[in-house]
Amino acid sequence: MQIAVLLYDRFTSLDAIGPYELLGRAPGAETVFVAREAGPVRGDQGSLAIVADRSLDEVPAPDVVLVPGGPGSRAAMRDERVLDWLRVADTHTTWTTSVCTGSHLLAAAGLLKGRRATTHWLTFDELVPHGAEPTRERVVVDGKYVTAAGVSAGIDMALQLLGRIGGDELAQTVQLLTEYDPQPPYDAGSPEKAPAHVVARLRAEREGMYEA
Image 1 (spheres, rainbow, N blue to C red):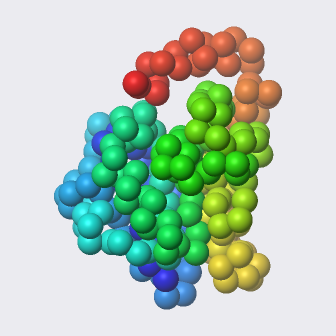
Image 2: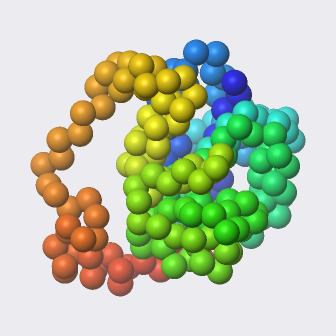
């Protein structure tokens, strides 16, 4: 099972690395990071780069596609080479997945038309013009398309996908191995729970966070 993780300039690192850590533990999994060209691709904080070992052309038919989100997703949505690769790869995949604003790339490629999907809460409305039906669930499964909400939701998505690929015991084993037992010190992980002034500030900063 080949799992292709798409990288592009200014992706959010945890969107890619969180699911990678879990999905890569499935028996027979081969995880490969891909980008327009092979080489290092820098994340949104600028201090971390992940090496794409292969170019898009070298991975034409993966079994699973994972698209991370990040501030650079809007620019990637306008990259026809990336969108064409997603369309072609999707004809071969068993699962086509995304985390955070990665779902916008899937939508821009025409893969989520008429399908339920989720994304980061700050960019929810941006799914609509591409024909997707946004929902506020943390992980959404619609056919072979699995989308996760913002950043940390990618870990939940990967666990759910592991269960579908290899059964509940595999997913439970990986969850225990990675000691994924969240106990956050704050209860501010959604706009419904966070203090109103924090939500308002992030909304005001939205355009700076998700660049055009």
